[in-house]
Amino acid sequence: MSMEKPIRRGEQEERLSHDTIFSMLSNQRRRYVIHFIKRDPGPIRIRDLAQQVAAWENGIEVEELTYKQRKRVYTSLHQTHLPKLHDADVVEYDRDRGTITLADGAAELDIYLDVVSENDIPWSDFYLGLSAVALALVVAAWVDIGPLAAIPDIAYAASLSLLFTAASIVHAY
Image (cartoon, rainbow, N blue to C red; front, side, top):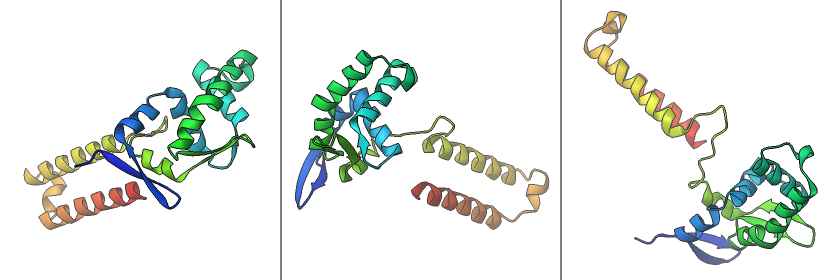
């Protein structure tokens, strides 16, 4: 079984190895770039991107950045990180205009980047909790606890199946 992932570039198909993907994502600055562009997929100016990445790296607001902090990030994005992401078809980097947009290859990275908002829980934790609730209901039905004893077994099975189906549809969407 091959460890390579196909990424399309125009009509030509290239293969990007897992090692290349992991190497590309091993840098926090590149992950910040991907995160920022996924939040705002429209054309982004490199100046705005550099400011936000510098702010995240320094744990401060954009308004508090020094010229040196902005310039350091801008230079490394321009010379190293954006060209690397562009070559991997993750972003479209127009050097002449100084703009960046998300490319088709970015979707290939979703499986490697479990991006969970601050107030959300990972899907793996959600399904673990859902399974625990389902198991508790099955045990309660098995030992005939209270009003659960009056519900037929087929109703439990149907309810749990519908619950997992609904959760899976939401997850897939």
